Length: 221
Image (cartoon, rainbow, N blue to C red):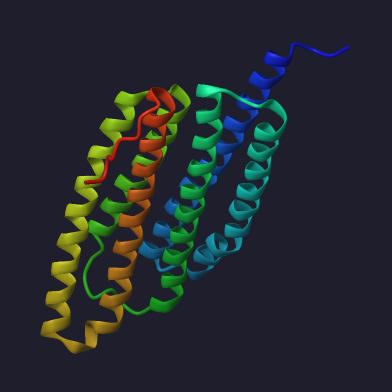
């Protein structure tokens, strides 16, 4: 006996959303773990992030396949179509965030056990903000909340401010002592990766607004 086609479709959309949240949770975990590994200079922990990146990549392909099948078999209209297309975009942003977490983890290997040229204060703060943005962007997606998407995106300005501050500070270290150049460059890259993660979270916020309103709004200006 075949069920209600609409109900079947609703169930499929719910499963899609759950898969996206599972991927988002893995990405949040990867960001948090890579930063912990950096602060502790724990190469073993960093390697776990690198190894787990393939799990995120594999999940992206599975969700992409689910989206394609829904488009091919259900012929969704209007908001349903936006929900699936938003899913496509969100998993792409999540996959890139996972890559950046992996990049941070690889930096831990590059720095090794060499003492930090300065205490890590702004980078962990940046990381906390970026993680919060990822979580809130996904909450906005689940709740279909335009307000949450907008409020989340305001943290991007704080991330950008910290990135600029870190850049200036590390540049000063490099100018004053050329021996700091190698490590300062690695830390600059970490700052850049975190800034990109925040940008991807903002992209998700834009997709949420599109999903709810049918209009594309730039949150990153």
